[in-house]
Length: 490
Image 1 (spheres, rainbow, N blue to C red):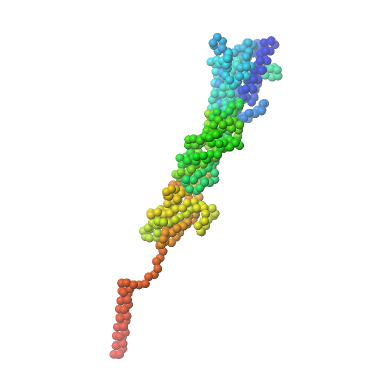
Image 2: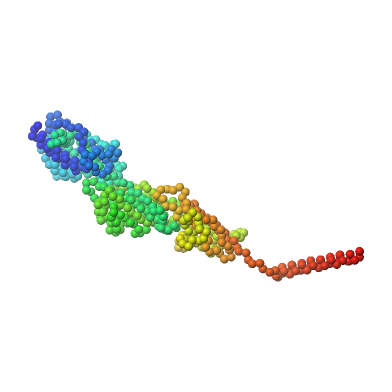
């Protein structure tokens, strides 16, 4: 073995170890080897770089990554490294011991691209992983590999640039040469955010608030990177309005403060400040939670989803797919008397309560009124849950973290003030509310008129009856006299 060969082996062993240690690799394989270095007779003139691309966090040295975590469609670009010679970037010749000078420092500079006397030639190789793997056929030389496109994968922190030498010395004391280098870099993928809705709104009428809670996994970045961008957005349904200052955010176990750790803007978006991103850096791999309130403005079709939301870190955005819903319906009450045709009745008061037992109480509950309404001159009940009062009454039906089929909710309705001169109307409880304007529940409450007192017979009608009675008596007397005369004559 020549002195030059021994030097090359020693330099390659040290340089290769530096290159791999800075590359984000979990393993470097030795698919094929040769016992001769690049300057020896019979040495191969080319080799391969195989990149197996995995998702997940780091594993211990020597541990085999799970093949189930291989990523497809990740693009890598491999550049040939050269030296500047008379203003031209010329490829490094590993058969020349002098060209190995300075390589240890070059490899140690990773992930920085070549600088100083080192440069990138015009030769590059571009390909993407298939079944998690990409293989580059490379002439003997020095290369720098870049992850240039994540493809369909939510990669928030790409593998940093790493250097590869073909061949690389391996084994104890650099006893062998590897012309087929295998690298297993790993990327932490961004997980999707999720969202849920609380069981109930603050109140049971439109205009009240519902509370949503988002859970945002904080990704783990590679190679001591930090967060330069962190934005979570929620594009609200037009029937929802964000309640200012309602956000409660925790980053890991740290409570965040609006104006210090984050700002709120837009339809609703939370942008973390430098102070907030520093807390993220300290909580990689943990969760950030955001609880916030929205006011329900309208019923519409009765189904209000909260679907359009995403988390974005360092330029990579991932949408959430969990869709919670809030359902709302309407109640309309008409008030009339028992005339033919019926006349509207004004001034009747009604109260609505949530049905909390199996049936509605017979008597009006003392507490828990949801809304109060009074019938107007047209007999239509106007409800006090808006200002001014309006009709119909918009009521909560259900909240759910997944879509519901035909949800309904029962309420109890009572007439608490009856118009003068009328009896209380009959109401069939409970009143069932269905979602949406099309599912409007209409109740017509009829009040019968009360009977008046019996009056004495006076006036023309009484005189007529007395006259007729007198004539009847006169007629009866005349008949008796005629009967008596006939009997005497006989």
